[in-house]
Image 1 (cartoon, chains in turn green, orange):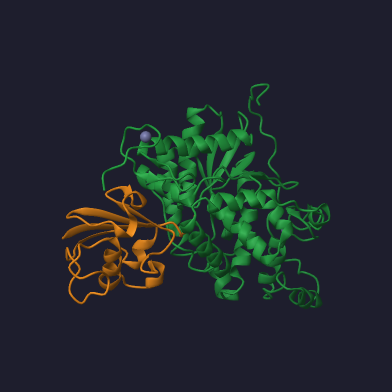
Image 2 (cartoon, chains in turn orange, blue):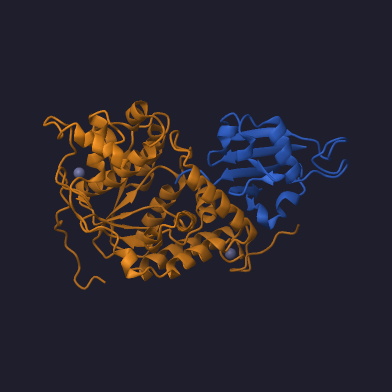
Length: 354
Length: 107
Ligand SMILES: [Zn+2]
Ligand SMILES: [Zn+2]
């Protein structure tokens, strides 16, 4: 087949077909349009203002590695005026996270960004290896998910950042839309396409790759020769997400625009106020000060269950009743350090910043 | 015919945890081979079956599906997206470099 020339510059040899548009484009045009689209996503949603301190949730995987590289590039090119940090959570999974953290440490050098690593062990006193050896592989993803969410906020608070960005891409979001539809979780469906979320006390989180296809992220990493780590977590064959992902990839193969179409339909769902109101109002955890919809936050409940040898306590109502029947939490129970939301940092911010 | 094969994105774990493989395959489909028309020049779909039969060590379902690579695996032919080269029907040439990258492993 004769080489095709680029649909954008009409000059260089095309190396990639864009899944979003079907356009065949060359390497330089690909880099430019990919970066420019992320920049447009950022400016249209007004994600940042000059002087913001932004933590990139970095796992060493492809998405967060490309995100760190692109954030650095755009911050310099368009003078966002951001201070960027890498924030990694060490779940304590031997053979998985220890290797991916080595990648993040190399990224720290390559991108010249400060890196903060916060481990489950130092925060909760438990590594995931120990959680799994205690409770088995059945509910471990519940523990890991709750622990990670809170660890990211706490890590961000210790860096005094205003904002956490994560590498969630268009495929991830489309997959979550599908999962919420299949589960009938309407309240989540209403929220899952938001580019930026902010709880009452937690730190703003956003997804600059919301409209970036996984294919393009991986191609970008490949052509830029970025250093990333790729292995499935040894404890998490998340079967349900796996099915949704396989289904989405089949849809994409039949019609590449399916991914963006699903995101747009997710955005177009109107969730009635009554449904939205079922989200409980937020308070702070009586034990650790983190935001919570009950007296105890999920992490404190899970940790108490682990410490008292009743790991199902925070997972099922039956388990909770059993725990309560055993009496109140002992005084010497291990708890999570008290959470203090980041204090306002005094940085000179230019007036009229947005 | 000599080819250079590269695996990435976690796919290398299925192939002896080795990223680069130099291989030699027949340049036409051998007699009695069910993975193509005997005597015809070999294409990427033939290569995918050849890799499964000769190099793959575990879990073939993570690599091959319905006679070609599983959706979610990106393929490059001499550093060009295979979607521009005729995908599985691309006819291989001496010294081609074929890259397979999984997009399915964590972000
Ligand atoms: Zn071009
Ligand atoms: Zn708590």
